Image (tube, rainbow, N blue to C red; front, side, top):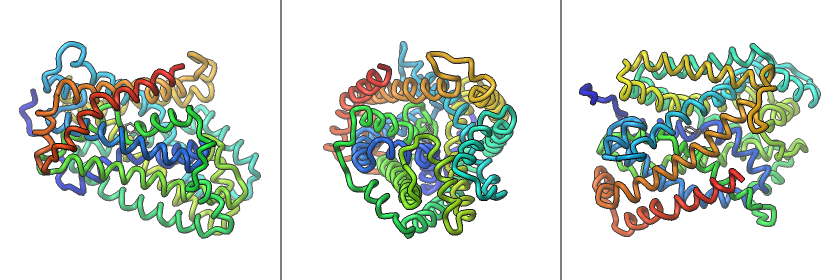
Length: 446
Ligand code: PHE
């Protein structure tokens, strides 16, 4: 056990900024608008909101409880709480997922960084075909995307070197408000465009006939990814939360902030896409292909496109920090490696994996497994297998292994606990969440 005092978050705002920084990421700004576009708009949004409330918040709370109670990293936490047998090793899934997610996450974050400079250079007057072509040739290039991906990894590592309070907390406290301001500016621009109402209609007027079972599954999977659940990220952050913080209100606030930004990002994107007669259902290229088309036609497009990609890069960075911290805390506390060295090691390892991911879109695209290249494979295994499995086990652990008494005790620090709430919470983590996850997991595999 480490006798050194653990670094913790200093203020309540710091806790919120850091945890919201983890949750709000590429998932909100890159993925959410396009999956909403693909799955019928408002109807999808409503289902997604239901999952956030019913399953997302309880599992987030579970992670915070495990973390703060154990005062340990995602792996050590289960050991400290007296887990035995296989339970002891739940955390290892999280550390594995952290490496995998960061490897492709860093690549996309790198693209975003590239698009800030791209916007600044303003390669004006390209045809839509040329915009698509330039994106495709960029991501398949053997060196260009790697330079940007490595830059993101280095910045992430550099922030983590400063530790929990000076690194994670201070960075989040500065970047999160900037992000909110940018998204609001973009929203105002988007909804004041002529023809924007069609997009708002698409987002907020539900047509449930457009929602498929597959869409429902995507909504649950995305709730997990977006709230950073299932890999011990929030166990790790929870272990840095002081006992005078109210864990329930933290979980609720983070979930609200995450959902709000996902909706605000959609408002910034979808009405603008409609206003210029483009399609919101284009998939992953929505941000990097459709949106540059929009910016090109928009008045002041250069300015707004720089703002947009700064927003995306900030969002990606604060999430990357949290993903890397899972492995850093594990290396430091379990393998007893000095924190600084752990940061360097983890940065180097994830960077290497990231390089392979990036190359798998270009020169290594022939290496596939189950028909997927390495980039897609990392995404698939982590988001569709490791996160749901981790989430299910975390939920079962809190419901069945820790039990109501221990949960109540931990929640009582910093708040008063209502008995009806406690009972509902335990019921959800014992039954509702694991069953829902199992359904999604099995159908996702099929
Ligand atoms: N929640 C982040 C996003 O929305 C991604 C993430 C997943 C971060 C898992 C940490 C853990 O982009």
